Amino acid sequence: MKTTHHTTRATRATRITATALCLFALFALAPVPTLHASDSTTITITTQPASVTVTEGATATFTIAAASTAAPAPNGSSTLTYQWRAGQPSKNGTFLWSDIPGATTPTLTLTNVTKSKEGFKYDCHLKDRNGTKSSAIATLTVNFPPIIARNTSPSSATITAGQNASFDIRVIANPAATYQWQSSTDGNTWSNLANAAPYATDTPPAQGAAAAALYITAAPATLNGVKYRCVVTNPLGAATSNPATLTVTSTRSLRSVRPPLPKK
Image (cartoon, rainbow, N blue to C red; front, side, top):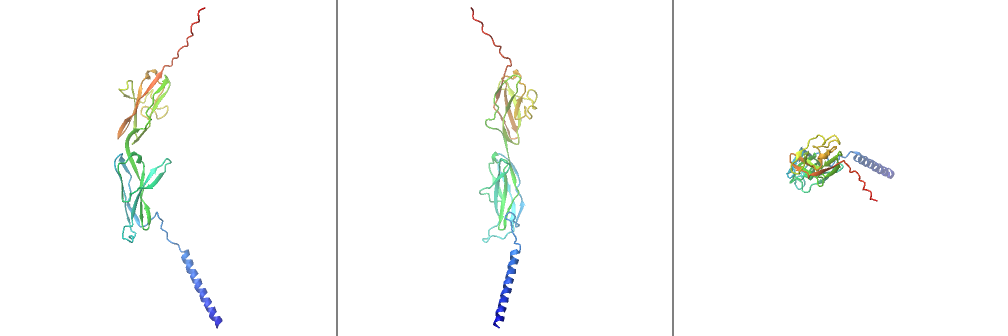
């Protein structure tokens, strides 16, 4: 009887252990639902931020409208938070993203925008108790009048008649600027140049009286002392370069004169 009693206990223990193992296996193998941090199913964006174009010195505003169906926080406060981010253009074509301090409301306001913000990207990072969601990316375009880059006004040049000469400038502007080179013989009265010889545009390409570089081909001696400057214009204003002078020397060379022989 004792033997039977102990056998029955062992059998029961074995059954309990087997059942526990089965239950453990079911829970261990069952898929666990995962909520990705960047894919909150309880956040809905109804209005995405739109790209903005402003003039330098003006105010740029980006707005987002969103809602969350997540349960309120234990203290009763709203579960949806906002964080605006800025993407700064880099030299390799990518953007360096960072949070904007204090930009934690549905509206981002940028005051006194400078041309250095041209091409920046902005988005809003939303967060509730179930995860996060990012808005669409908006672009900031800043328009500003032409600016001739420092130390890039045309430099005076000296050539021999029949040679080529060039003058060039570097300009930043948005929208893009148009170029008009001018000439003057006295530095007071200036005349617009046309894209015609000797101010050609075909050698080299895209250079001439209406480009960033003025190319003069086979300069005649009559251009000696002529001054050149460039006026750059866009819808927001204009800028004029400093003048440069072209010196054209004669192609004639002096004959060598043999000194007279001493008298005997």
